[in-house]
Image 1 (cartoon, rainbow, N blue to C red):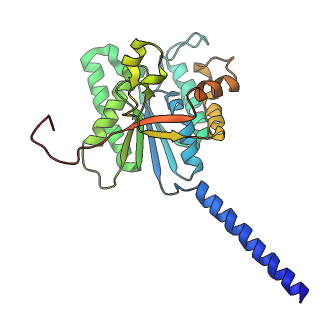
Image 2 (cartoon, helix red, strand yellow):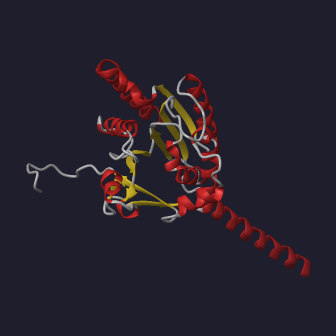
Image 3 (tube, rainbow, N blue to C red):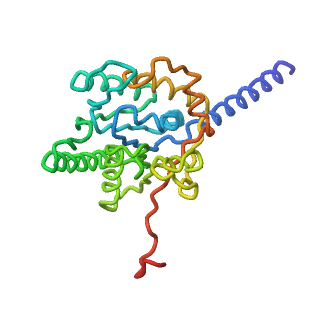
Length: 271
C-alpha cells in the first residue's frame, strides 16, 4: 500500500513539473507563427532594434532582416578600409554574422550605398524606383505580421535611412493587403535628447511613441554579439559593458511609432 501511494505521489509530482515546464516553455514562445520583417538601409542599421529582434526570435516568431544597400562608403576613423568593392564584401559577411546571432533570416540587396545620389536624376531615380519594386515583392513573399523600418528622421537624418523608410511606407500604402500587417517606425523620444537641434532633427514626442518594447539583459547581450560582427564599423576598444551601458541609459526599451490608418472618411481637414 505504501509503495502504491509513493508511486502515485511521484506520478502526480512529475505531471505537475512537466505541466509547469510546458506552461513556461509555451509562455516563452508565445509568438510562434508570427512573422517580423525589419527593413533598413545599411549593414549595422539593424542594431537599433537588435534587442527586440532577438526577443521575438526567442519567443518563437520568424524574424527577417532586409538590408537595402551594400555599405560601400562605410569608411570611418576606426579602421583604414577603403570605399569600394572590398568593403562591400566585408560588410556582407559582417551582416551575415549579425543576422545569424539574432536568429534572423537575411535578405541583403545590392543597391549602392547612397543609392546613386551622386549620379543625379538619371542614375538615382531608376535605382530608387527599382528598390521600391523589390521591397514590394519581398513584402508580398514574406507576408509579415509586423514591419519595422526607419521613420522620417532616419535616426540621424541620413538620406538613405529616410528614403528606405519612405519607400517601405509606400509599399505598405500601395494596396490593401489580404493579410493584416502593422508598420512601425523606430524612434528616439525627444526627452532623451540634450540639445534643441537634435530634438528637432530626430526627436519624437512621447505621444507618438506609444509602442514600447522592453527586453531582457539576455536579449541585450545577444544584440551585443550581433553588433560585434560589424567590426569594420565599430570602435575596436568598445567593451560589452560600454555597449550595455549605452543601450540601457534610458531603460531597456525600444520605442516605436505605429502607422495608424484613418478609420473613417471625412470631407474636412479640421475634423
